[in-house]
Length: 104
Length: 483
Image 1 (cartoon, each protein chain N blue to C red):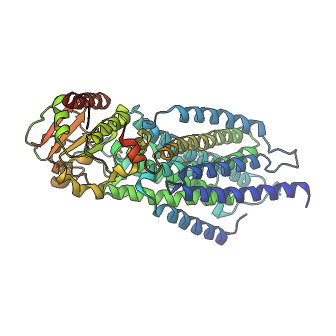
Image 2 (image 1 turned 30 degrees about the vertical axis):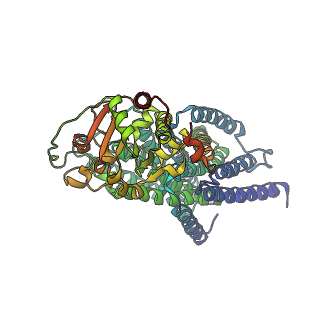
Image 3 (image 1 turned 180 degrees about the horizontal axis):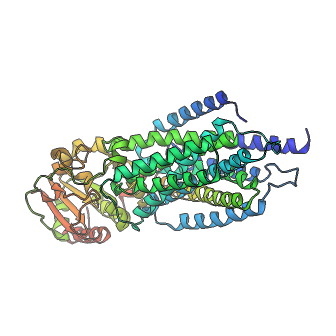
């Protein structure tokens, strides 16, 4: 078990980290970043796996199964969608693409 | 160390690496240059953590976690569906997909909370002599309840947001006394949560979840489509917090860190978005946006249609052109055609720019993503604050599928629901061409005074069709030669 104050410190440091990371982000990346952070909390999947792994009664198994199912959807879907968005940024990021693009 | 301890150590080490990868992943995603590798780093982080978790508590009853087959089946089915749908969905539908996947995460956190709470209830009600097991401390139970509450709200709320953006549901759903009903539902959820903390009982837990899930629905129903970006971002932060709290319940620091980082980042992102609309988050959630209010000011003038050929002539004679895309461009999938039109204009030595309102579309940066997809270079895309001073010098502003974000009543009409929202000063351009499918209003459901201005012409067409006709029109004027 995590000691109460240790947990508080972790909460505090993680909150500042999240705040710092986002505060200097250009507007163009807001959507991909929202999508990306959506993927990051897909790590909830491992918590759900543990919940299902420790389930003994059928009720707990059903709840755990739902948890794993939903968590995996969060992780997989979040990854694919974010990847697709960022993929497009790559192609238009080449230097001088303005001049190239101007001549169809 | 025996083998079980070694496995446990390796799992913890993997979780640590995963946490590092996730944080560095988000960090890299915050710059356009490294963004793509960022999601890949984070992806590796989650993948190794998932693989490691298959060995959680292994070693005593075998190498793998209990119920490993069930876990594998759940992951396989869900991943296949999510992967397939995420690959197939059009870029324009991204916002609702983010809402959907985010809601699933919230639901997963709520499920973790549910199984933890049921476990606590079983412990509390078990005969005294049974437990050799560790006792739950109060902080765990409280955070399990809070995480479950937030996760449940995020779950059903995001599903409603998904249904609304997908067009499966009426945009808004309101009745008198709605805020009272919502308030009571929330209080009921909190009160039931408190009862669960004091006396964990299966029935109370079930009622608590019912109230929490219902509140997520009720809370999202009255919120209109224009506010959905803020709401989705808020639920994203919610899910993060829920994951962090349930991580504490399970004693899993990787969950705590990833969840709280997202919670904090998401909260900040939500505030940035609300600020871009000049509204507070509570205003978004509780104001019944666009419902009644005072009588709107009378708009004088008339809508003046224009044919594509005439519009093309206007463009041909213009020097400085600013294109303002909105959600309508996304719906019409017109970004490629619009870029082709822009290239045709640039070829004829026009100064072309894209002006993006911070909340154009359904998510901040939604338009940037679509324009990037079409291949529009970054330096042609301008943010609101940079581009607004340029409108008075602009010969023609083309508004394609944007509505509320260019509506001057946001500055002039105090009774308007969008009053105070910063807008693009399209109205100040010498000539405005509005490409629009019909006469309908924007998401806020209000008339747009811009459309009635003397310098404004309406080109009624689907975005793609209009751009195609404009390109043809330009070619007709000069024979397609350009120089």
